[in-house]
Amino acid sequence: MRTRYSAWNLLAAARQGHSDWAPAWREAEPKPRYDVIVIGGGGHGLATAYYLAANHGVKNVAVLEAGWIGGGNTGRNTTIVRSNYLYPESARLYDFSLRQYEQLSKTLNFNIMFSQRGVLTLAHSRHDLDAQSRWANAMLCNGIDAELLDAHEVQALEPRLNVGADARFPILGGFIQRRAGSARHDAVAWGYARGASALGVDIVQSCAVTGFLKQGDTVVGVVTKRGDVRGEIHADKVALAVAGHSSVLAGLAGFQLPVTSYALQAMVSEPVKPVLNTVTLSPSLGAYWSQSDKGELVMGGALDHFPSYAQRGSFDVMQHVVAATVEMFPSLGRLRLLRQWAGIVDVVQDSSPIIGATPVPGLFINCGWGTGGFKAIPVGGWTLAHLLATGRDHELAEPFQLQRFHTGRLIDEAAAAGIAH
Ligand SMILES: Cc1cc2nc3c(=O)[nH]c(=O)nc-3n(C[C@H](O)[C@H](O)[C@H](O)COP(=O)(O)OP(=O)(O)OC[C@H]3O[C@@H](n4cnc5c(N)ncnc54)[C@H](O)[C@@H]3O)c2cc1C
Image (cartoon, rainbow, N blue to C red; front, side, top):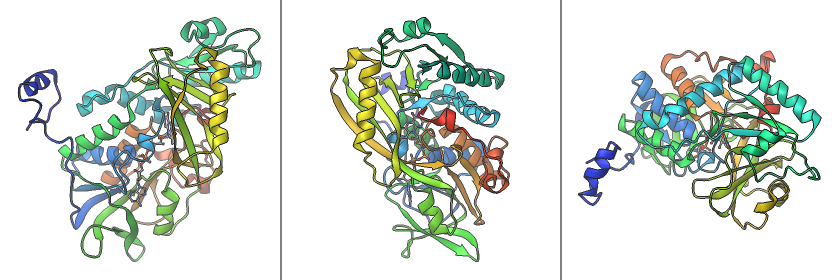
């Protein structure tokens, strides 16, 4: 069976009618015991398993996924990848991730369709211009690329923007991170799943974790609807990567997280020929836009206004995003809306993630990416795998411990995380 994707193998396989390709990953039955169980088969869980095997040689690993891999937020997001954060701790974390994205197709031998088309942030007022020049300067101080733009430069980049003097939201300028862009979300999940499976990791779908096995206070495994007759699967270490349900799993394990869960929605128009060049965001309007490779206009906005586990999204946010789209891109006003959906995101009070140990021995966590964890999948997996394999926090993850809510050393990225997915 053919496993490696290459031009040569494509040609050779064509002669067999493409009948001899191996499945991308093995669908496994759970074993009674693992070195590590990762709960959640989204990008972060799969990347954790992949880096455990690839970077540390820890291969007796299972990823347990309640539904299907990538069916959570990883397959629902608007695919923006950027590292334009304010604080040095975040800049280091997200830029490490962006650098991994730059080589991920090669690393995984799987085309994640990474497109560095630039992320353009719009300024509509003097206040926006001031705030954005501080933001861009902070990025430059942190060694991240950023370029301030005047109104003409913005117009040259995105000619369809409404730059008229009588526009309700005049565009005075903005800034761009040119290395930022987007990637195909499913491909990121599938690529990590394929890579992990090839290294021996068991990927078990339709396997919801419903409880934890404990010896004293220590977690020594999980309870599922599969596994042995009692549904038990044992492990030396258990990791949570269940964005949207982190508080639910933490509750089952016996601790609380400083997390609130909201629906975040996105929508696409009918497909059209290429009309947008960049990923464009308007923090003041609370909306952002890009164009998918299929031609759909991809649109998103802010969180719903109330906590919820209903994966739908409320009408007022959708209406707001559509109104903002027509305002900013009048020539796209006659496009029809094709689909709308939502995912549940776990938001931490300082808009930064949590990657590290939990108060429960044997249990580790990666959560709280809120509206922006797709871009962080490589670094989330890399740093959690490091902790699970070595017992020490990765230096990039040290500032992002749960402990910061006791020490008060918060990393408040609300301004950069706003709607800037
Ligand atoms: C509409 C929308 C737009 C977004 N846009 C962007 C963007 O442009 N850029 C960006 O960087 N981020 C974006 N995000 C955020 C990003 O999608 C998430 O932060 C990221 O995908 C989280 O990945 P994950 O692997 O942690 O979670 P998920 O992909 O949600 O995976 C968690 C998995 O855990 C599983 N699970 C839950 N409970 C259990 C259980 N009991 N047992 C077993 N499995 C369980 C779920 O089924 C799920 O598959 C967006 C999110 C949404 C919803």
